[in-house]
Amino acid sequence: MKDSGAASDQRAAVEVTKDRNGIEQVVLRNPRGASAKISLHGGQALSWRTERGEELLFTSTKAIFKPPHAVRGGIPICFPQFGNRGLLEQHGFARNRIWVIDDNPPPLKPSDSHGKVYVDLLLKPSEEDLKIWPHSFEFRLRVSLTADGNLALLSRIRNINCKPFSFSIAYHTYFAISDISEVRIEGLETLDYLDNLCQRERFTEQGDALTFESEIDRVYLSSSDKIAIFDHERKRTFVIHKEGLPDVVVWNPWERKSKSMADFGDEEYKHMLCVDGAAIEKPITLKPGEEWTGRLELSLVHSS
Ligand code: BG6
Image (cartoon, rainbow, N blue to C red; front, side, top):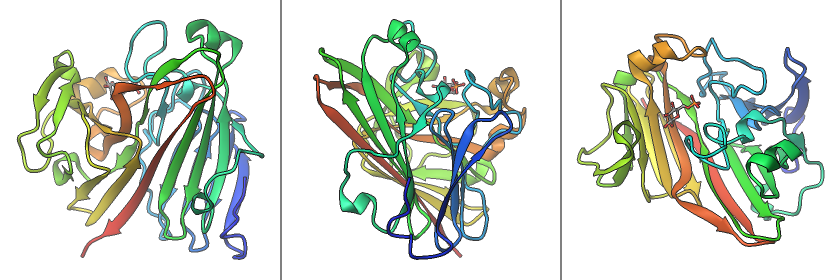
């Protein structure tokens, strides 16, 4: 846990606190006062605030902050699968486990540290995890706040098995939005997608930009590395930069499904939109000793 590039400024800080269940959370603060909060429950970012204190991630007022529940909001990490197949729980177990702070991670490129305040987390499978998914791995996650207030998540997953394994991954990011009818996504035009509301049938996106008027649950395939979410009412745009994450999940439960979720308010679908950088359609295969790296960086642009 370090704040190397930002360490010279008094206001840059990394602070470890505990939530009401005694689970550690790490608060990152950059020199200009932007902040992020990451829980060791799931290695999950739960808050990302601008220097003016605006919250950019949605968390449900009904979220349950107790493992084995995943917290409804922030950025749950779906690993080693996305969805609900086999013995594994929905979206895999990583978001339901307690991660640890990794004080001595293997070195990264200088650009992954310089000018950033960050924390390194680590997840290794427990004996119980190995019974349902028999593959030894080390999942290292660096969550950083840049000098400009961008939130960056860098994942490194290493196979420490003696046989290959495959996995899927998604950063299931709940963006806080003014109103679902006021937002649009650009960057997914003309792409093929798998529609989870139609048994994963494949379609091609026809519209110029994606707008919302009903439930949506799709995996867009092989997108470019930049996606933008425009929020007209708040006059702000989220920009998603991703590397190693070809797919993009778009999810909003809308009215009927919201009412069936115990940890989500009936009207909250209006104020959130999940847009995930992901690798789903073509699972990633790692041979023994191999490591995969994926990067997601979120930034905010205000418009007048
Ligand atoms: C979506 C899935 O991306 O995630 C949906 O495709 C699911 O089917 C949603 O409802 C949220 O999942 P969960 O497990 O956090 O309720």
